[in-house]
Length: 183
Image (cartoon, rainbow, N blue to C red; front, side, top):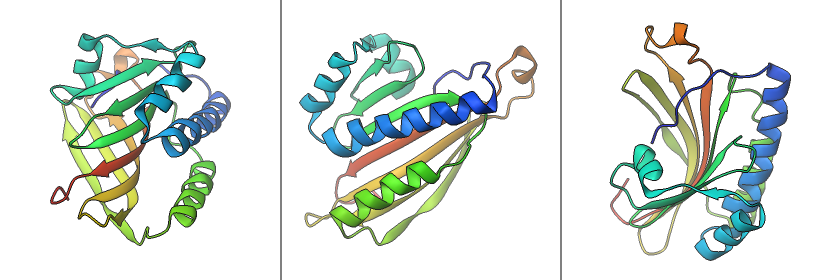
């Protein structure tokens, strides 16, 4: 579940990118998803490049998934296939930034859908020199699974990699349906 950390641009550019990625997440992961064909149609319309199976495996390892890179290379869109069914938008940023636009669309989705009453226990882990942090909300589904909205941020913690220009944050907005008993 890792994207390479790369040198980033100015904070102003980061704010603009955050706004663009929030709108993309809303269109693809909150409106089109969980209809995988609808997500694919949006990515085709944007002329996004499908990632190869080898490229997908770098991030998803053995988990079944499909992904596209936006035409300008600014982000990727992912679908993870069941048992965890998820849609995510991932990109590099200079910092986490102001998440108020994300909060607005997530709150709107949660109000419209109903039942989002549980804050997800914050997740913190270190993997291969990268610290991964996630927060979010979820709701129980009738059949025992859950629907969740997450924000992940990944920061490089390996001091040997930072001088090589690997700085910034990888951000990921995720909409996930998890099977019963998986939480």
